[in-house]
Amino acid sequence: MTPVAAPSPRVVIVDDHRLFRSGVRAEIGDRATVVAEADDVGSAVEEIERWRPDVVLLDVHLPSGSGREVIEAVAAAGIETQFLALSVSDAPEDVIGVVRAGARGYVTKSIGGDDLVDAIFRVRDGDAVFSPRLAGFVLDAFAAGAVVHAGPETDEDFDSLTTREREVLRHLARGYTYKEIARQLSISVKTVETHASAVLRKLQLSNRHELTRWAAARRIW
Image (tube, rainbow, N blue to C red):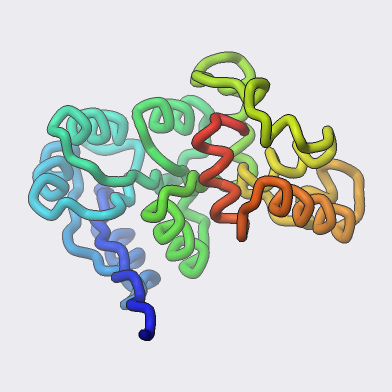
């Protein structure tokens, strides 16, 4: 039997600039279904309650409030959806604020169309998605104890990894490419690939997306 493909994500775009919303629609095309748009906190919550989308593309600054207020209101209403912050801001306080509220990812408006679609699918499927620079802010918050709830020290699978494999794992979970990891750790791309393969094998994972979910579930960043 031929496997049935998963339906495309249903998306609500929340941003106060109509031309930007139109541009996002055009970039997404038919790869995801934009079911509604909103330009402030109140209309955003109404549209999310109405459509129950898979993913909400959310600006962090809105005329009537903040993206965080949208997330908190939707959570209070008991609606299950995933939030991907899409903002011009890359300020640490904005990133950490929406992550604490419950956003699964944060990307800036400089992101390309293909990468945005990929981020939508990944967030819909439970991954945490951040650009490398923004992931660093989240990492700093975890390191400072701001959002850490569980440590990897008691995880036998994590303990089976070498120190270098753990470093590669953390960078992969933050969204870095092999080339960026190689530069960060001062090793070759080939060495990064070797460590990544070892991590997947030891953790019995099939791909990078599964690895990100595994790390997120254990608060390993």
